[in-house]
Amino acid sequence: MRSRGASRAGSRGASGAPVWLFDLDNTLHDASHAIFAAIDRRMTDYVARELMLAREEADRLRVAYWRRYGATLLGLVRHHGVKAAHFLREAHDFDAAELVRAERGLTRLFRRLPGRKILLTNAPHAYAGSVLRTLALHRHFGTRYTIERMHVHGSLRPKPSKPMLRALLARERIAAAQAVLVEDSVVNLKAARALGLRTVLITRHGATRLRARRAGPTGRGSTVGLRIASLHELARRRPR
Image 1 (tube, rainbow, N blue to C red):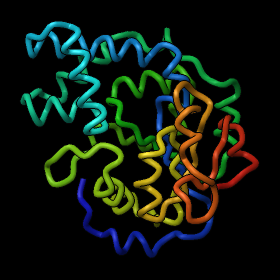
Image 2 (cartoon, rainbow, N blue to C red):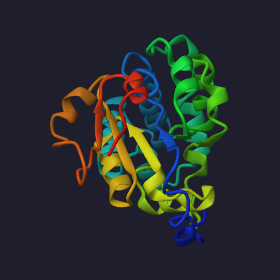
Image 3 (tube, one colour):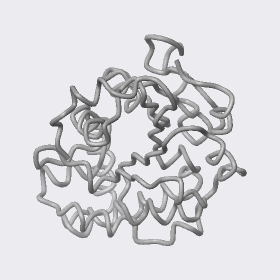
């Protein structure tokens, strides 16, 4: 992903229908219900096997890298030379369709919601595609930015990377003021807001409800432009 042309993209399309950037896990579906537990188990198993650690130590290291870098994968790549593709394949080697839980009526909502929809997730491509098909939303996301596409100048830069977000906007020729990021992560929303994107925090799923209390007020100038408990609120409310 390259950042050339960001200044030109910033001058285009500031008015009209928004371009929606949707996160996947705990945004389009409730990953905290069962999927995150499945992924965490496989990540810990992978760390224990590849680094030859006891399982308790592997679990501690998995969490430590997640807290430090925002993704366990980044710590493993930087400190242990782990191959990203191999880790992602092993960590997501399960049938996601059996574990997906989500709100009803999402396909009708996405048909009514004006503007282009782009998937922006730190999850891998195959897993994201499986979840979107299960949700029957795959036709609404012609453009998908999964973690495999989040490289800037040869380095992996997943959310909340600002250089990655700038490169995405430039590549898709989207003005920052036109884009709306819908997320369950305040940290990711903060990075987007700093670049001028509008932001929506969804608080429906899992631990997000607790983190949302510390997100501060909503509205113009804040990290969170709009706070919602259901995706259906997007049909009648707009982020500032």
